[in-house]
Image (cartoon, rainbow, N blue to C red; front, side, top):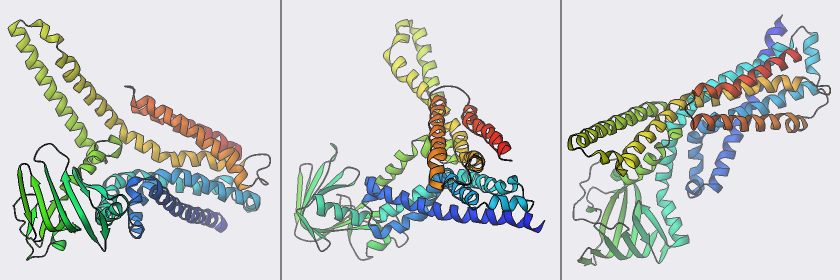
Length: 425
């Protein structure tokens, strides 16, 4: 009886340790692949990459838990079958169900954790990764200028130099790329700093906001990110005016424009946290109500003036009605997102539900190697399930069916798992 209580706990600990090791490795693989394939990550200095790990881990765990758990159980139970430990445990009075249950418990706990970690990633994780990128932006700009001699530093501000040496830029040319309030400036040399305003601006330093004569007032509590550029032999062409000076001039650019990056990212439903999804639905509903009100006013005006041809106007068909249709699609997409994330997170449990008994049955189960088992059973299982899940997801996204259809793949896995467990017992 004592052995009956100890073995499942030991097996659960073994599963957890192997899973943890594989998950950490999986996170490093994510960082490694992202660093060499993603343009944003590849520009971050290698010394700052470890700072990204805490922010990337929630995504790596929530997305990769199902795959790591499947491979973990395959390794543990194949090794158990090869060592014939299952026979020893069964002879001691421990059933096959007691051997399988620890993996189910761990998989279910990880599924629930993955659901919440995805929300953590979309709020805390993405914001943290962007902060690391912003704090690395200074070295990124210098590195880009050394290799390419030009870059865009903030939204529409273009910077080019002749060369970079000892942290200074020589032969600098700076301009904006918009049509309104155009300006361009040159300098013999310049130095660039990026960081919180209170840290990179001295209390006695005179700084100007952008290309105006508005003086920045130092505030020791100002933690907003700014770009500070100190020019020597400064010359600026602002519309029809031209100013030149041999003195040093320091200009600050607010990095509020970089928040547009986060806003563009958050515009995708898949990149919104659960709290943002509720606000997004309300915003889209308000937009629909506003367009409906405008349609009602336009219709009343057409009826009063007898302009029945107005109902056929291009603005009604191509703009207002199209806006309503797009908002309704966006609301539908936002409403299925919580169900999609929960179903995706629970894939960890349902795949484990199938994989564990699958590794314990078979004519040559005791003699099969781990890699052989993974290649002929686990990989095809993951491939078929992933393709079917993607097909169902796309069907739900582009139709008006209930999001409950997303549970069809999981139900099929559960039924198949029940049959396999019964066969294993």
